Image (tube, one colour):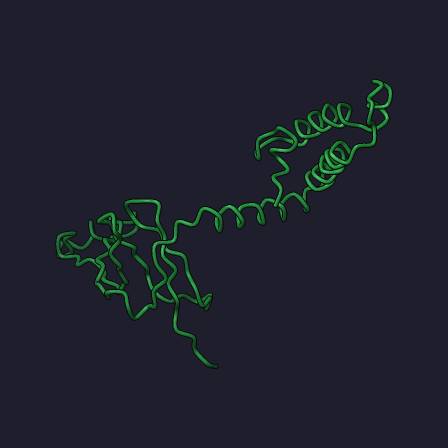
Length: 176
C-alpha cells in the first residue's frame, strides 16, 4: 500500500491546508503540460505520468475526510502486519488464572456517613477481588487480561506491561 503522506511530503498529522499546499506544489512540478513547456525531450514518459497519477490519487484520498479516515485505518493495519510485534497467540485456558485485589476509592458520601456512624472504620474495608488472566512475556513482564467481555470477539490483543510486545488471546466461542 503506497504511503500517500510520504508521497505528498507531509506528516500523517497534517491539516487539510498543509496537504493542499503540498499537493499544489508537487502537481505543478510533474504536470505533463508543465513538462512540455520546459522542452522536456520525453514529456509523456511513463515515470512522469505515474508520479502525476500517484500524486492525484493521494490528493483525492486525503482531501475527503471519510476516505482519509478509512485510508489511515488501512495504513495502520498494514504497518501493524508488516512490523508485527506479536509474541504469541494463546488460548484463554493457556493463561494463568490469578486473583486481583481492587482497592475502592472513598467517595464523599461514604465519608459523611462514616462521620455519623462511629463504628465504621476505613481499616475495616476489605479490597474487592476479581479474577484475571496472566501470561509471562520473554522480557519478564506480564500480559494481563481481565477475561472475556461482552463484545464476544474471538480474538483480543493484549499488551505486555513492560515492553511493546503483544499477544493474541483466542477466546472460547459460545453458541447461543
